[in-house]
Image (cartoon, rainbow, N blue to C red; front, side, top):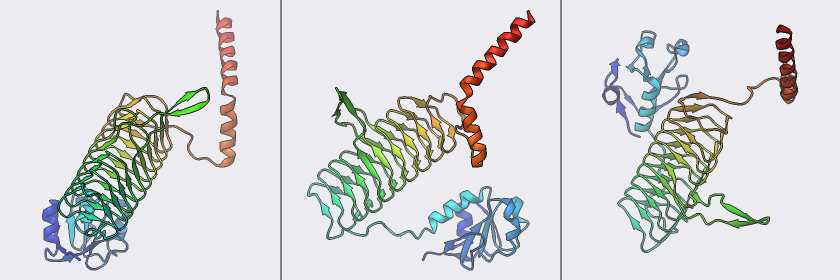
Length: 342
């Protein structure tokens, strides 16, 4: 296991080091669990009382919290961001594949870069291009003409359909399907006529996609996922959706076809978006929102009724069902008051 000195970490983080510069850490752990050889962090001052009992080799914390800790410290502006970076440098996650497994099928005309690894029972079809150091996990399917950029990693049982493009440094978790047919049909006197989905999916660099998420290919044009987007587990991205740079989408979100989402948006879990509309840059949508209209101004948007006791909710629901009746009565009262005042 790799070890890093506190001096090296301080230099990489641009942190102020207080304590033993030669002390080494090999792993990162939570504040209450970290021990010798491990580094931890304090991102909220409300947990200061736990600092003195901390047994970690070092703690990453803010200047305001540093005075409450006597041990080795890396003093940073944002301990949570520092934690993310150190966790990457000390990451012990294994490769999804090592070398080329003998049970993998790789088409004779597939192009593999240097250091490519393909796991057991994976299928790499004709015309596929895999960049340098790509990892394709066990049981994956990479369809005809697909392209995976350098250092992209697929965990087990990912399906990449034909002609799909992923950029460099992407990460796709198990069970995800990219490039499946969009939900395109025409109705012919009650019978559904399938519309072949002739576009593809184009994914930028540094995109991460959670487990069991589905991203459909476009009907005529392509479904587009820009650089730096992160998508959680069990999301549905329909055909011809476009998602802007560095947008984050939490689990179980559903996006209907031809939706356009801007840059730097934050989408809460289990949100639902109507199709054929646009969400501007810098929008935050809180969890379980139902977005039926375009959003043209940055800001925070919510919908739905927050959790109540069942008794309170039943009363609220009953009143909601009577809104139209109450509205008519209110208008009637307003008219009477207006008439009486004349």
